[in-house]
Length: 302
Image (cartoon, rainbow, N blue to C red):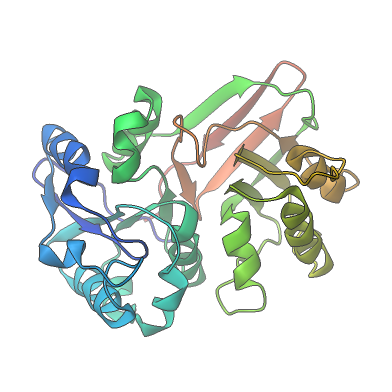
């Protein structure tokens, strides 16, 4: 995997909306925050285009993303929000120039599409908070993002959850939002999960939807070769009047309980305020015991 270059003071960070539309008021806090960190947020009127729920038409969003992918003076691309729509533009994008000079791509949720495209071409990316969330994010969440942009090391230690499965594993971290991964099944950018540490998170789903998606991942064989599993936020889950009978955590655990791998629940990443950065495509060590769980990323690969 190729590691994009670290940023320095004055580096330009492009702000891009690949899915749902956004207003200036939504991200003004983040714009000032980025400036305070010593970077230059780059955006123009294209960021605020509107086409029903989208930030412009598919053609417009793809053209804007292509411009930033190819721009030699842009050091990172920060997706300002998720929603739905990135999958509608992914096949319009050309990564030929990008692969010659990779840059950090940042975001989560619907940005899972872009993460997995980058992993398919051998470039690391940052599963991290986005500008629309900056006002509510914890200090630890924001620090983790800007620390890795500066080239600092990244490791975490959290309290163990009772559902965790103890053990240790090493492998590249891949994954993202469960529903987006489900939508990529069978495509050329579904992640290669063999010998990887898989990360999963989701928001606003019915429990039976989670089960359906996890059953699909299981039946497709994508869980068979993983070395470890990290489960982040499973936020605002819903049930029907007649209960499904399992929590989202129990649904996921059922699918991997027999695989003899470490499983870490409650990791601070996903649709939560404490949304800490993960380096997708980077090798890491996952350790789980009865007291704590840790995730330590290796040094950058150039």
